[in-house]
Image (cartoon, rainbow, N blue to C red; front, side, top):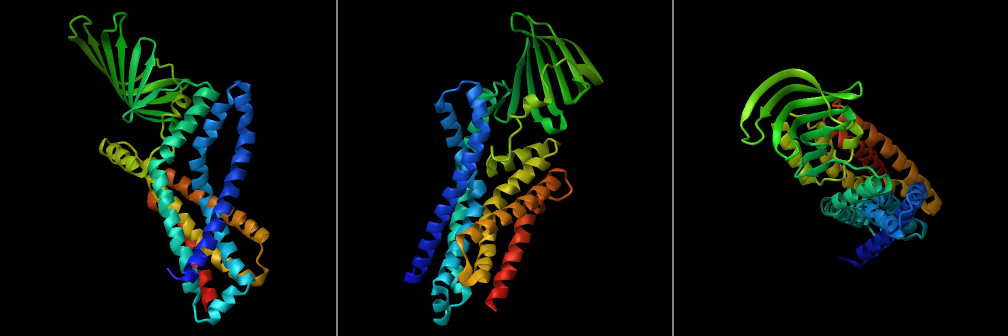
Length: 360
């Protein structure tokens, strides 16, 4: 690594860390003001409040890292231009690509580190964060997920569910074990699916089996197309069970999607989240490609305040594009790959065109 490359990389990493700390600090400050009333109302100790925000840090970092790389690229290139160092480098025969290549390579390393964090740290920390907010702050009791299966205890019944889709008020693959006072199974109810309608659950494709509790022998079996079954849970009770975008890593999402597709269930949401685990860290590279030409356009007039404004505006545009595309992906309008990568492609092509235009 040449002396010039080390100088550029050092300046870029310093700006990146400063920007990252600033954005994460603002994020934490806003979120703490929003959440602190919930903790105070429950009279929870400060340790739980601190543990909540420690677990939220990996998620905050992954969300603001693209903005931090944009700000760092703008500050680094803008600083070189403002001090005349960029002009000296160009006069020495270096092309714009040779000057900015260390920034792009370093950003790829940052992207790799973010992906490793998403795979190894983010699922556990996000799950802990949601659990603290849901159970300790809001005081909700949710069904338990064991090995990607859902188990619910309600009265003298144990319910096993393959998959819950609370957004569609739908349960899939339900088995209800009804127990007597001696904890012996006297009835088993299997259903292909259940939908929440008129403040109750309508089960479809039901097979109801009756057993002799002492011997366990089946004494009766009935099949019904649809039937109202008493089940004292609502769709919102399964919201924490339905895995969020960052509560599973890429490999877990891929395994679950393949399994659900093999069982005949709709795995669109899991596929969209799976592709998002790849596209989200890569947004850092896209932002750098956009930050370089903005800094060059400002030349010696580039300033920190302008960089902050550009970072926020570009971040808002990217967030809107990404959110709209993801919504199209969840609804099936766009394929999962295109839904998660379209914002990166649009912003990346715009940045690449600006870089090539400035290189001429």
